[in-house]
Image (cartoon, rainbow, N blue to C red; front, side):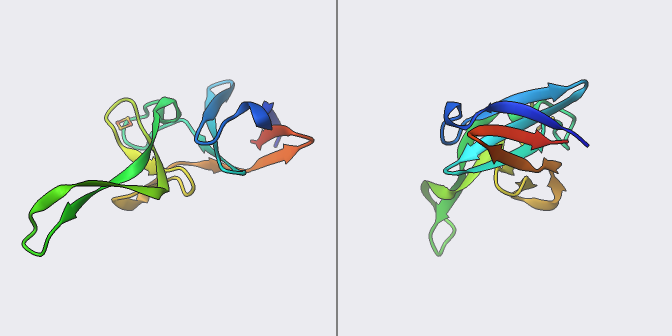
Length: 121
Ligand code: FES
């Protein structure tokens, strides 16, 4: 068990991330407000570099009682990372795919010490 230095905490903006590597292991560390979350950049779909994807809000389709579409809504509190290979999305706080709770990213603990961000591996 060790740790990797990621960055100074104030160098990572809200909804931004950094990818760090230890050999073949790549980990994306993301900031949401004052919290940090770390996920292995290995997409459960086909192994794509998921942590190099875009950070986006969850999109929901607005339907009326007859199931007619009235456009899309962005859910502010659900922030996702979208894998750049085929677009699978994962919640940045939980690492879970929104449509299948069994499809999830592997997480790592993050620690902020003296203004520096570290991920434990
Ligand atoms: S490898 Fe990530 S969506 Fe396919």
